[in-house]
Structure formats: structure tokens, C-alpha cells
Length: 426
Image (cartoon, rainbow, N blue to C red; front, side, top):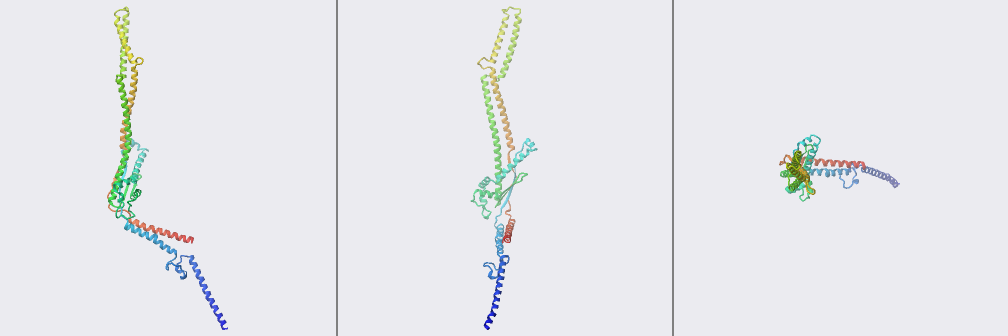
């Protein structure tokens, strides 16, 4: 009986122990499940047996680890590097600027009168086009190659002491040099006045001044060449036209002189007028002699000796009149004065046309010269480049501040985005 009673006394006690252990295990599992659903709770709240290996004993969940790691990589490291680079490493750059305007020659009074109306926009458009040509030339590869041959830009932009991020690779192709040039040479243009400002950045004051002066000089040479080419084309065309007109005039004058030599007269029209006058006088004299003959024949016989001189004079006048008439009209198959006069008139007309064409060509050449002077484009520099005294770029404080603010904003945005995605989808 004693043994039976002892067994029945131990069983309720063992059942209570098992029940308590089961209840504790169930509570532990429910807590672990709750922690699994809510990862914002610290891992340290888990029992040691359920803590995952590799977790930080004093830290939180994976979100806490992500925040710390991202803060280090996204914000702290870039900020420190930015401050160190712009504060201690970045090479100073010296800046100088030159200002000029692209202008053309004086306009004529007619163009000035036209400028009062809508035609003024044409002159403004031409000036704007000339300014755009200059600004594009400053950024062009042609200018970069010319100044590189003159000043050795590759050496200027890769001097000793220039940090590796700012320096230019001297062995890079010309396309890279042009892109580097456009980052260090800034050009601006005022739309209203057409004033152009060129700002040059270099690593020494002497380099900045030399580059700015070279830009001004080469721009002036380009503008002068452009003006000379335009005016030269205009003058070449007008001079060629004048040469053709002069040649034509010489040909017509030569033909006219040759005809005068052949015909033996300088002016056939004057010769014809003279013959007509002589013929008129002879006919008048013959009419007088004929009248005298009739009056004398009234009282004399037809064979009277007194009538012989009158008749002889009439015959002489008839012979002269016939000779002059034949000379003017010409016989069949022979050249007459009228034909010569026709040839002279044709050549004289050609000569007059050639003279007028030559006079017009001379006037056109003079006008072209005046127009070329008025259309000449030049650069009017009103602010010369000067030697800079101190480095003005890069702006270390502002760039350093930007190197702090930008990574911080990026880190904050990334952290917020990850937190939103965890709360929304997990």
C-alpha cells in the first residue's frame, strides 16, 4: 500500500512540472513569433537560445544594421572625402575675363534712313549672326588646336602640383582637350546689346592671361579674314566685270578706227552733210544758169556765140552734180557713202553701248569698295584681360558644404525609402 500511495503522489507532481514547462515553452514560442512579425523590436529581447548568430548583442534588427552601414557608406565617407578634397587637395584656379563687342563699319545715309523702319531688323540680324560666329569660334576645335600649337595647352592644364581630378591627361586625344577647354573657358553673350564675355580659368595667373590674350587675338584674325574674304569676293566680281567692259570698249574702238582708215574719213555723217551742202549749192547755181540761159535765148538764135559759155557752165554744173550724186549713192556693185554710213552707225552704236557699260562698271567698282569698307566687321574690345591676383575657383566652402548636404540628403532618402518598403510590403 505504501508503494502504491507513493506512486500516486509523485504522478500529480510530475504532471504539474510537465504542464508548467509546456506552458513556458508555448509562451516562448508565442514571443518568438511576435518578434519575428515585428522586427523593429531589439534582438536582445529574444532569449539567448533563440538569438540568431552574428547579431550585435546591444544592437537592433537588420534595419538598425542597415541604417548604420548606409550612414557610414552613403553619408560619412563621401562627406569626409569631399571636405578633404576641396579643403586640402583641389588645386586653385585663377580666372580672368575679356569683354568685347562685334561691330561693323559705318552705314550709308540710305541704310541709316532704312534703319528707321522695319529694315533695321536686317542689320540687327546680321550683327547677331556675326556675334554668334565669334562665340562658336571660341568654342571650336580650330581655335583649341591653334592655341595648343602656340602655348602648349596640354602642358598648361597638366602642370606639376595640380591634383589628379583637375589635371588634364597630356596624352589624351584632341577631342578630350576640346571638352576640357569648354569646361575652363566660359563664354556668355547679352542678347540685347550683343556684348560677349569670355572667362578663362587656369592653374597659374600667367596661363590664364596668356590664354585670354590668345583668344582675343585669334578671334580678331578670324573676323578680319572673314571680312576680307567677303569684301574680296565682291571686289573681285566687280573688277572682273570692269575688265570685260574695258575689253569690249577697246574692241569696238578698234573696229571703228579700222573702218575710218578704210573709208578715209573720220566722220561719215559730217562728210555726207558736207556733200549735201555742196550739192545744194551746185543745184542752186545750175538753176540760176538755166534761168540765165532762158532769158538770153529769148532775143538770140540758138547757135549764138553768147549762149555757149552759159551752156558750158550748165554742163559743168551737171557733171559736178552727177559726180557728187554718184559718190553719195554709188554705182551698182560699188560701196556708196550710205553703206559706209550704215556701218559707221552700227559701230558707233556698239561703241556707245561699250562706253556706257564701262562707265557703269567703274561706278559699280567704286560702290563695291565703299560697301566693303562699310561691311567690314571688327572686334571692339572694351575690357582687356588682366593678370589675376588670387585663385577664385573652385569655391571651396560652397563645394565642401554641398559635399556634406548632398550625401546626407541621399542617405536620408534611401533610409526613408527602405523603411517605407519594409512597412508596406513585409
